[in-house]
Structure formats: C-alpha cells, structure tokens
Length: 87
Image (tube, rainbow, N blue to C red; front, top):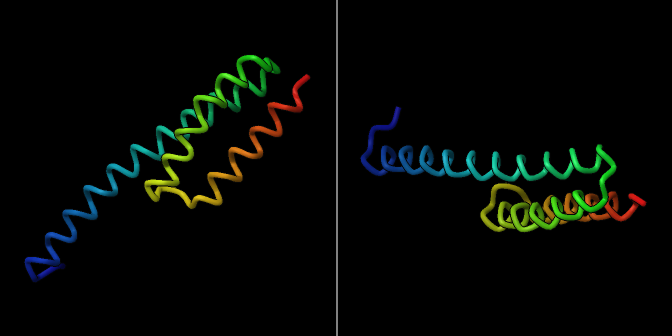
C-alpha cells in the first residue's frame, strides 16, 4: 500500500488513465468488429465504409499509446488487403 502523498496521487492517476485507455481500446475493438462483420458478409462496399471509419480509430489508439503504432499499421494494412481481395 502507498504511504507517501506522491505515491497515492500516482495510484489515482494510473486508475484514471486505465479507465480512459479501457474506453479507447473498447471503441477501437468495436470499429474492428464492424470491419470483420462486413468482410464476413462479403459486402465490399460495406467493408470499405467500415474500414474508412475504423482506420482513424485504430491510428488514434496508437497515437494515444493504447496499442503500438506498428500494431496499428499492421492491422490497417491487413484489413486493407482483405477488403481489396473482395471482388
């Protein structure tokens, strides 16, 4: 258990940041799920729209430190490949 004032404050800050990051991660996953569902249905138009909506969310999560930027780029790249492959 924290004894010093600064350690107590650090615990409060970590808890607050964890909540924010949890929300950001959840939001990102929602957009990713929409892309996955559009890809599964085979609807290229819907998949393109979902990817255009998901891409900024994924990159924002990386910018805010929720996920690594290379992970974000990889996700976007792989989704783009899969959407392009739908014919």
